[in-house]
Length: 403
Ligand code: LLP
Image 1 (tube, protein in one colour):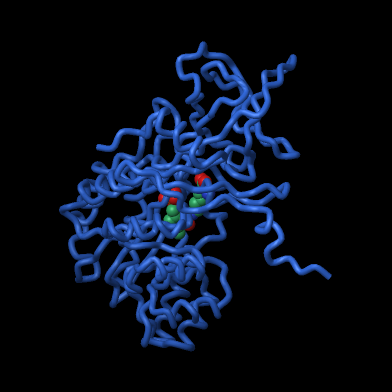
Image 2 (cartoon, helix red, strand yellow; image 1 turned 120 degrees about the vertical axis):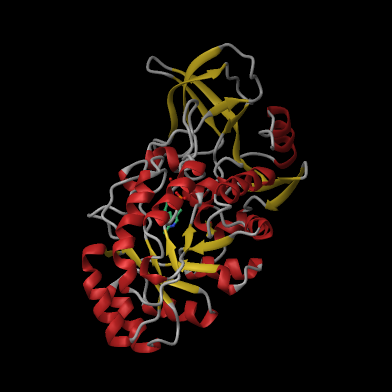
């Protein structure tokens, strides 16, 4: 079992590579993947890493080396996955709202495709008929997930073909002799309650017999990871048990064995990631003591965008007396990372670390306020490796055309 990276290690890495800095711990990713494969060892289950969480090429290669497959949400993620070395039959492209030419490109690259609209399914049928297998992304009309912004399976969501339109899917299947190999749902992110997945399976079980060439059911991602002290993750062994039971209760739905797919993103990479920042300024006011770090929502958007909680530790003064702070950034907007947070006494120049920053951290970062994107470091076998250099001034001008 890998230990967390220690404050001393993180300070060394921060000093060596500068801040703000994303640091990833490879062995933690391996531990997470092993939890999944161990729990599901008695079922025919395959895990596709939802790489939108973190696409650094070294992370993709590492996850490939572990034996997982990959799930992509854009054609460029597909290309990154192929570049990393994933064989095309292990690359899944679960698109939403895309132009058909992107689907054509994915088809020409030979990857697995999930289509999420009747419109694109019709175009797919016209062009490929039975010749290329395809999956259908359905919207199960289940509300689940950490907050509304990351709930995708409910009956007001844009994602997938509403399950109540399954008849229309079946008409297209018939009309074009579509070769449907998987049915897909993704209900949301940060789903702790395993019964949500079981409910999803129940919805798919009703449809499975209608798709004669089905081989896979894809239950999407969304496993919860613990962000706060006292939080727990999705109980993966319990999920494995309940998935098995669901299949035992519906032996051979549709008359053939089905492989189960999952697409976790956060579960793979959230806890491996540490976002290391340095304190620029401490400002005492009547309202709060503000600690401004050398970052902002341009680098870690989750707190401002989803009200999400990241544990913040003063690794420079872990034994300091606990005090209340509002931790903010240096962006010219309100960019609060934490309100009224108890942290060991903070001094200017201290390193503050945000935990659980591997998933959707760097990946959602930007150059807002013309600030540089952070560097990324991968710690593997005890050694830190720079895997993305910090931006430099030229990066801000790259792609601009001066008239
Ligand atoms: N599969 C599909 C089709 C998805 O849309 C997603 C996430 C996943 C799998 C992986 O979900 P995960 O296991 O990572 O929860 N930026 C947000 C999360 C957005 C998730 C979008 N789709 C956040 O930082 O919380």
